[in-house]
Image (cartoon, protein in one colour):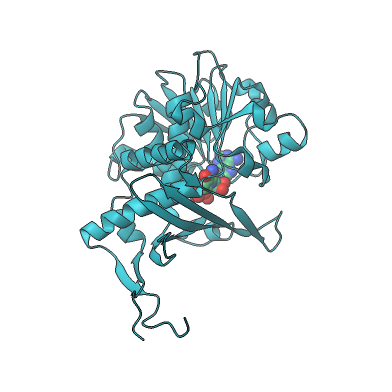
Length: 348
Ligand SMILES: NC(=O)c1ccc[n+]([C@@H]2O[C@H](COP(=O)([O-])OP(=O)(O)OC[C@H]3O[C@@H](n4cnc5c(N)ncnc54)[C@H](O)[C@@H]3O)[C@@H](O)[C@H]2O)c1
């Protein structure tokens, strides 16, 4: 019997998603903010991500996060999953990134997969864009100096996101334990090849020197231990922590506003929020979620004197929204490789 539908899957390798517009940070910021707004309006289903750490869940060498989400924004329904993986073994090899991600998009009516995309650069773009949305709503107005700690993949896209979200930025202190990495990234932006920015990027090795006087601090390192001290911070700083540990825990406790992408999800994963929650030092009521700031359900910064602490773990819904946008743009541009799941299913 001839099947009614032969499921067609558009395969988009990294070069394809880039051609389809992935490096357009203004578009990624807009999609990210729109997705948090949709979540605030109840148009998203996103269970907390599930982690598989290997060979030992706590002291992992590699891990994969399963990140499913469904979005129905009134114009289109889409669902999918990102298999988000990282391995400490990767940076030891030449030319291999630390994070390795794949996105599968499916049609929610049939669950036929419609696209498989490289999600590695999408992750970096949307991770930094999420920090950009936090900064847009929570940084002190007219912020001039940002300290970005970690000059890896996310460090690079963080420069794009911060300069796009905060056009008043004049100087970015870019810190890495490996000064050569920070220097290379700074040189890339000075040349303006991939992305043009007005701010000056200053490479550094001392996190203390970089954060003193900074209006915004974003940490995107692979550290598993806190290393940024409260006494280094400006009183009205906006701190944005992307990884498990970087700020000493009293930095979060000192903040006037604690903002997170998902408190529930943060409780499932080791790190600053889980630890402080277990110690009884914070509860869900002490934090606001980005979705509620974006919709205006809760106020953002209400005075220039407030200190703000943001923590994110990453939201699958943003990957799915951006992957779907790239899927449509790729279809319009005729990019990608068509695959089929089967010619005729053996059993129905
Ligand atoms: N919150 C999210 O949504 C999200 C999403 C993806 C990745 N991440 C996290 O972002 C972090 C960075 O990822 P990446 O892909 O850019 O990794 P990467 O390996 O490309 O870069 C990390 C950089 O941090 C530097 N570094 C490590 N410890 C440091 C320290 N104490 N001080 C200064 N520099 C230090 C390393 O030298 C390296 O250059 C990871 O911890 C990852 O888990 C967060």
